[in-house]
Image 1 (cartoon, rainbow, N blue to C red):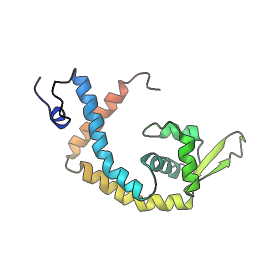
Image 2: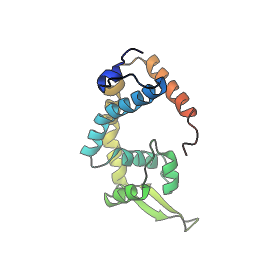
Image 3: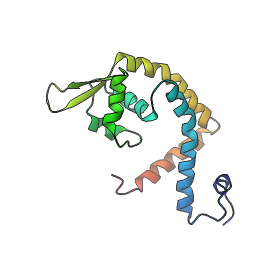
Length: 159
């Protein structure tokens, strides 16, 4: 096997053990690089990427969701949803209320301030996506999307 770009970037002296290993490490490295710009943007607004994801989910579900339902819709899994939501409540970006139909369920809803923050972030987030991947053609982006879907479909027992 010849030396790859990833191999050079991480200064790996020996070839990867398998193509699967190289592909997975390529995905991880690429994700890390793509997230730098977004994480900086979110940090400037006092939230994390996971909190941004929660706010986006709640904007799309104005009636509110339970923590479990939010967790099911997250792009990336987080170990402590309650702690993340607590911080959003403290920042007045979301609020909690007991369900009127089932008092055992606590629903989380986005606040006006949370909606304003997302509105402020909408364009800069799109700009970051364009800055990160705008050099690729629409066909290449579709190809990446299709390959990522196929890769996820092959992952078993991830839950």
